[in-house]
Length: 279
Image (cartoon, rainbow, N blue to C red; front, side, top):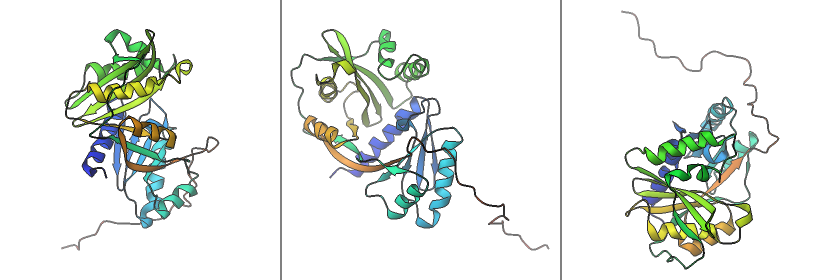
């Protein structure tokens, strides 16, 4: 069983990764609202549920959804698996549905599998390869914003953090990439991507193995990565990871409108500050 402190460190590192790329996080009772207005994807816009009581869930959901809907963002909700019955019912009432497979946080084993010989070469990206790095995740329209965010985090890090873009090569061609981000004692492998015409060569697996073998962010950090399918989880277990915590992810179907139901006619305030008697 994973040490809870290692799990929390890994989750904190993931949040810091989104923040360092230009996002922000808002703490509300029972959850953290992770938001990135300029990268409008669920991976960077989600609610991390931490415990919402049944009597307070309606106000919580309305507050959280209003935060994202005002920004025209479609968030997901991450709820520790198994999801509490009242949270599941509340999300379904607002149109959210759980994904078929849970999202699993994987932590490296102390006895991680050693690096295997391969035709795939892996190394940290060089400064002149920033456009190449960005091309793995963005089109030309979105690229300048993402490129700038990676450039700042890479070359001008805050204390306690380090970002290392990684590239995997097959026959001198970059076929896979990832962003390795360390915050304090936790390092996370993020955004692993492989060119469509190079899949099947185990380039992504080779990249992950290389991280565990070479520790490019320095010693003393435990590495984590997320699995969003049983197939990926099985593959990561073979590479030296173990499941540490599971989340049920709820999302809106594509046809859902970003709107809250009407709140009804206005009424008097539900709470008033106490009044002291006049002297």
